[in-house]
Length: 56
Image 1 (tube, one colour):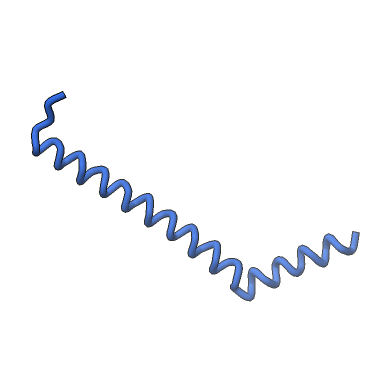
Image 2: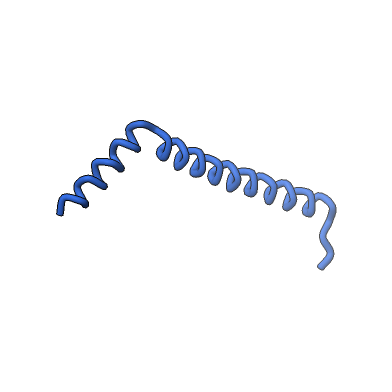
């Protein structure tokens, strides 16, 4: 297939933007998970759950 440079460049730019968005979402999820893990509220919630499960 013969691709003109303009089409090739626009496909490359579109793919790059898509990959940047995907990478950004992955970073947000990772930071959100790590923040939840180390936050005092998250720890308290986990300890409550653990204590509730141990009482049964």
